[in-house]
Length: 79
Image (cartoon, rainbow, N blue to C red; front, side, top):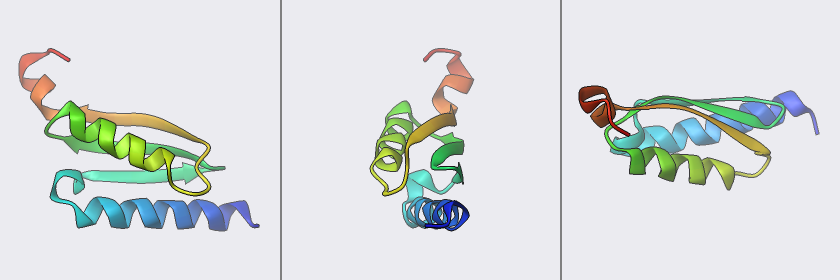
């Protein structure tokens, strides 16, 4: 298996999933050697946790780096 192809497939799948759900539409995924970094913002921490958990279940993913910003904490500063 060509690792670069796998990374492209992982990114494509996760980005399609993100675009298909309103709560995830501001997220994007990048994969390198099976380690996925998720960028973007969501309204609530639960949405970030859900997308991270979903990402961990995608075939070929060996790790996830969460770079998701929670919009509700930007306003209050709490998390």
